[in-house]
Length: 293
Image (cartoon, rainbow, N blue to C red; front, top):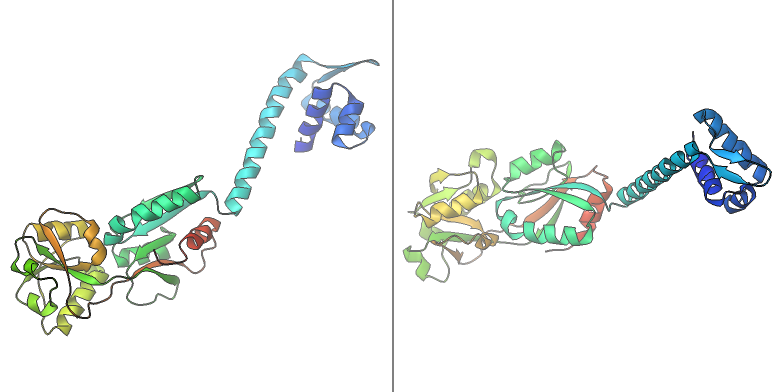
């Protein structure tokens, strides 16, 4: 049984006249009658009662008609879904966000995605450090990620989507909060709270580099796995931290942010994806964010 058999059957069932049905289908009447006979033979039942004056559905024909409509509808929905998938309008996109981008960019990205592609799904994973994002992209667990890469990765395409600098996160009662900006050198005798260096955190590497440029090695009191926890410990007075400026979106009582005096280290947000990922929905997503956000 082929889809055309169902279409032929429905045309005759609706018209109850083989000639009119053939004209509607733009075919000759004898081939139409032959196709209906083949369908009845395949089903093993008569679908129509035919006389020289009329055509009417049998009980089997009326039952088959209901299911034929359903089958046509299913096929049509499948066709539309396939076309939309090929155009990148449906499907699921898996997106990863580094710590600060979870709070600064995820709401913006998710809102814009939902408005542009209401029939597609976005699976967001937040608070991923850079090394975890790269691993997830290369292992095809993520389709695209917003992170802070210091060096190119051969298998990945990178695009800067937000330019940021590091800032200093301080406890609210810290004396340096009285300053409009803070020199990194002024933090030499402070305890630091950071993301884990052993896990390949970009912010950790930038912190170590900034302190080295200022002439000291930071005393890291505690390493934690999430950016929000870094800010929480700073607010609790465990130490200070160098964090991307978008961490200001993490509004924790007791934590205060100050810009770094002079030329602050850059910590740009990049969008990364696999070079060989030809997923149509990804291509639509990349077009949606083809400029800085």
